[in-house]
Image (cartoon, rainbow, N blue to C red; front, side, top):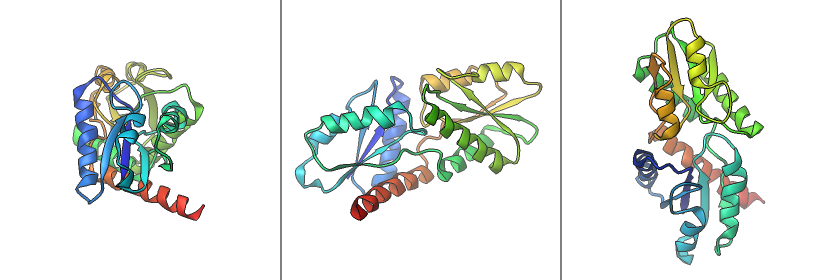
Amino acid sequence: MIVLAAHGTRDPAGAVVIEALAALVRARGYEVRVAYADVRAPDVTTVLDSLSLGCGPVVVVPAFLASGYHVRTDIPAQVEASERRNVLMAESFGPARELVDVMAERLYAAGYHESDHVVLAAAGSNDARALSDVDNAAHALALRLGTPVRVGYAATASPSVADIVEQAHGRVAVASWLLAPGLFHRRVTESGAGVCAAPLGAHPGIADLVLRRYHRALRTAAAA
């Protein structure tokens, strides 16, 4: 059993994307339930407590692009608050190769041209480790595109995407390091960039990553 734990958003389109991603994983023969770390119900504790005892090993896969507060503190606390024991925690998503590939695909689909200045748009965090994950994603995208990539944030950290766009000389193409639609992506689309890629969304490559994180968690537990 996989519990796919996403951030949560008040935007219904964001929840649709997470459910679609879960459906892609289910289509490969796995049981998947969706939970949210914040904003939206059900939370991880509620989902874990709703599972039958006979559903087999449960692995919580954080659908997060960086290992910030929710991944390292919030979700583990929700797991601990559950009455269910022997729940495994998988690694978060990013910055995995599959995600960078999807991000580049979305950027090209939005109309990116090699002459554009490229900005990777991320949510932002106060956690240095999460910001390091974002920097690693930007470096991987730069290698993928063969051009420099700056990091801009939709909230919390700086510089903002809008600040970079305002200071740029030439057209700016924004690659979205965001999983689903919501407030952060709306801020990115309002930045004034010439090209703004869609969020990573429900993509077969990301479904592959969910399963890779799931199986790695099982292997790690078996080897312990």
